[in-house]
Structure formats: C-alpha cells, structure tokens
Length: 265
Image 1: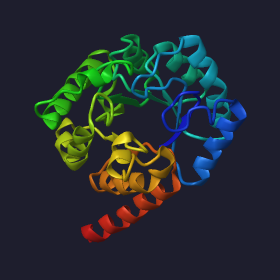
Image 2 (image 1 turned 90 degrees about the vertical axis):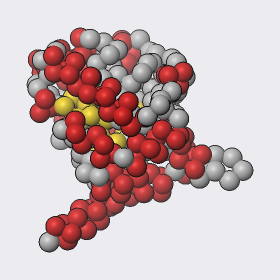
Image 3 (image 1 turned 90 degrees about the horizontal axis):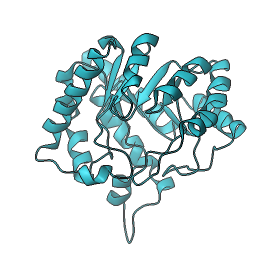
Image 4 (image 1 turned 180 degrees about the vertical axis):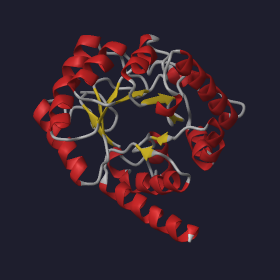
C-alpha cells in the first residue's frame, strides 16, 4: 500500500504532494515501483496535528482519487469521516481506511456496510492532538488485541461484512516506541481475531529513535529500516504494509514469499 498524503502537514511528506498533478504523478510512480494499491489521505494524523474541515479534506482528495482510479489504480481513502469516504467512493476509491476504527464518526461503518467495500479498522484511542496522552498499557499486546476485538464487534453490529474487515494495530497511535516494538514482535497474537492485518510502520519516529546517533535519524532516511519491518510483517502473514517508499518493500515481499514457498515444499 503506497501512501499519498495530499496534506501540508503530514510528518513524512507534508506539502510535497498537495497539488493534484504532483499527487497523481507520485501515485503512478508508486504503482511502477510495485504498489498494489494507493492510500490517499487529506488529513494528517501525526501526533499533535489539528483537524481540517470536511470540505477541505474532500477538496484535497477527490480529484486525486478520480484521476488515479481512471488510470486503473486500486485506491483506498484514508479518512475518519463518512462524508469524505462517500465522496471518495463516488470518485473511484474502493477501500476505506479508517484510523479511528469507526469511533470518530459512527456513520462511517454504516456507510461502508451499505457500500460493501473493504474496511480497514485501526486500533485508536483518540485524535492526534491528544492520542499520546493515552499511551498507557499494562500489557500492550493483550490490550490492543482486546480493543481491536471490540472494534470488530462494533463495526459488524453496524452491518459491515466480516469478510470485508482488515485490522491494523495502529503503530505509533497512542503508543510509545516500546509498545510498537512489542506489537511487531507479536503480530501473531492478533491472529485469533481471524482477520487480515495491515501494518503501518513506515518512517515512524520509533525507527528514527532506534537509528539515532547524536539525534534521531531524519524521516527521509528511515526507508531501509522500514523495508526491514516489511520482512517482519510479511513473515507474520500480514495482508499489506503501508509504506511511503514502495520499491524496497515490494522487493522484500517477493523475497519473503519465495522463501515461504520453499519452506512449504
């Protein structure tokens, strides 16, 4: 899953793809590099980010989605709002990626149920401006698993088909570095939820901390470490990884697939 942030303030590439032509070109480049689908978002969810209006979010994403879908791309809309998701689906998106897991807008799971499209449900404990206040866990693996189970139950109660749900442990969302590493080391603990997993570790601050010398590694220098985590996710059987730079991760997936095929005989 290649990331296209049509925002001025995303942590990794804010402002780089804010105009339509640049965003579309970036999406086509990601496809050429091996992306299977493109995740278009018009609202930053980095820690501390302020929300944008629904109108502005739709203004940013609709034309980008329309052009990429017309070019044959499989597009997901990264949003917490039903109104944005509805507009994106009309524009050609076929997947909804909701970092709030249905909590920010109760109408969103109902919209997904009516549309019958795949729905990414992430572990979430609050909006970006306050989420790190909730990064307290006794057992992060058990708590994330149990909270995701409750989110799964709630979206199914809203009418979403269980076969359409993908779960995301929400690395970096209300989680400190040690929580992210624990979850990555125990992705198999989420297998009992019975749904595919999306893993989004790309360029996040816990990688910058790991690679730090005198100061954290800059965002643009974290792609090699991201590709290493793609190997971890692929070995764990993840449905997809969400990454900013696609080629190395796409290559890593192919290598892991070949090794796993050999292991199966």
